Image (cartoon, rainbow, N blue to C red; front, side, top):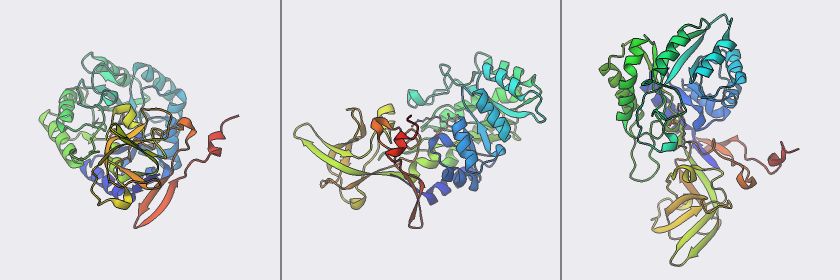
Length: 386
Ligand code: LLP
């Protein structure tokens, strides 16, 4: 099960709202359920949604159009129509085909749709290649260097039912160096000035420490670096500088708790500790080689001298949760095992591989736990199966 500390979530939202006073959206892809969307809204964040599904959950949680920022590199007619019906606050435009689609679908609307151009600043974010988005070779956005972004601006300006309000860039995720954002701002500033744009959204991407020894910039260090870079690069003071963090809001707020099912010692090889989940609730180790720590919640203060691989129950050798985890000497069948910092991109990327039902999600506050997403049942696995 995923267990979120509600106070932690709220304080992270608060930090974000304080650091980005002109507006900050929570990137719902990091973790979304109705309760999470409500919490972010209550704390003053808007919501970045990138599919009809994320929009549907956000609206079910009480979000109204102005709360929503719609992303996506391939928004369908249905997604754009739904966004228009809800009165979406911002659409972040990603391609020329999308401009055609938006023009067609917004034709004749009484009020224009506010749009931002997603710009590729051509900046390397020093992160995993799968979560790098700011370089020229990417499926996202319009290139600054090639002039595509300028052409997009001209096309958008010519459509009366669309109002170009700003530029947007997201350079990647799990970014540890604020200078990557500073360089992005330096690239974007002339575009913002030349096109007299009222808004600049620097996307998400603030990194999070997952394992011992890592450290990440704070929310305010990130925001301060961006705003200093804006001043330095001549972005007019009245420009609304905004951001849309996901991971840094939710990652450290949750732990995943598993039950140990087998402990296998292969002398001279390694020890394997198998838990009742795996790549179906956390595919990040397999996808990105991401590291985690592992603890036994009933022995958190014990030394952890024992090296073992914490593995899942799926039929793949690559199904590991923590390679070479440090664990207490004593570990037995039936013990709980927890992996901290699993609040982002775990539940959202969970699957039913091997028909393993997805775990439940609990929010904990003042010593009390409540279920916010139920555990899937075996019958749920048959719900859509005709
Ligand atoms: N804005 C846009 C346009 C994005 O594409 C993303 C993340 C964010 C904001 C939020 O970024 P964050 O603050 O969470 O880094 N599954 C990967 C992460 C993929 C991120 C995709 N886009 C992982 O587990 O590391």
